[in-house]
Length: 319
Length: 115
Image (cartoon, rainbow over all chains, first blue to last red; front, side):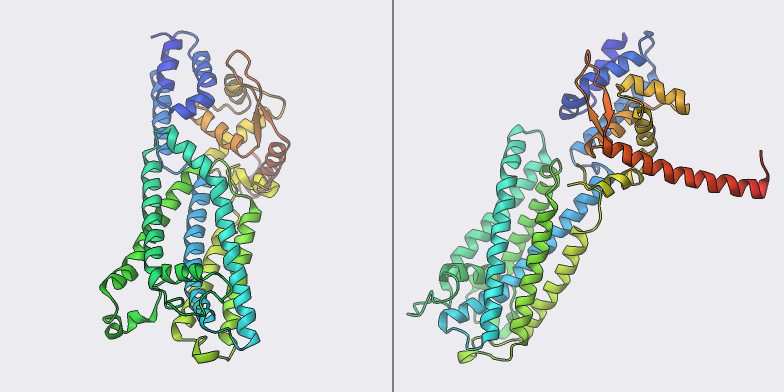
């Protein structure tokens, strides 16, 4: 076999996207090395083995590099931590929002805390939209290009989990006690529908799990939703981690984005603590603090630490 | 986003590719070279023959970090050039290596005598 043919044949061991970038020059290098007409079997085997390993890397079966692996793990843990934080935060915030729909808080502390938490929730939504907008086009382009089965599976998990979670939350929000035909509905800081959605989406985070007798009085569909919604969210989250690991690698998110997420988590936690230490339970005990709220704040503090330590760890970026 | 400090530390985090990456950067320190010229130069300066797969994996990593940049291809051969960040990273890495070498040699001389 002549050097040119052998070089072309060996280079085919590499994935198409790699060949698109390095293929020509790589073939030239092999041709130059094998220019005397004697193709080294050892060298050719080495090239093919490297190509197969690179294919495995592109399929996600091997970490892209030591740096990329560290980044991917860091990003995945950060995403999981931030989502858990927002979920537990939304559980507290939605209860207080429901309270405000019935009657505004009587203390300045609870009002201030609610303003802080509501602003922070709005900022979380904005950050999610901004990152989705910057991400969706690359994601769609990579899925359409095809050839990446892991990306397709992750995308299906993300879309399936998110759709189930959102549709379920909208469906069950119709039973929301905050607006259930009450004439004072929508007098809170946010429209009643937003509060209802947050309440429904976080129904799984409740003290009722510790009181099975009370839970037994709930309609079976509601209990099923409380049990299954975390699974749907977990499925979406696993898909998101898989998609982010494959799509966002070429363009790492800017540092300001991570700082904004971390600062906003601190802001929300501050609002939650402010409300917890405010002694006033408000009119008709609507702003009462329970053990579940203390647990919520503990979980948020732990996830904030987890998120900050993973997102702000000094990991050399891929580009 | 990669900071200068991260680029400077980058070679240390390359694992088994730290050696090839250092050799490539050192080879490019006197001007751009394409793949084959790089392997020949590295053979000359370090008596190390980099396998094509190793060479291109190391090239991909340091190119991704912005330590080198690909120039326009000349007859399918794409030369690579050291960037300012690459020069800083190489200088920092080699200074550390020199320090280790000096200490090691000094200790060897103290214990085993001068060769």
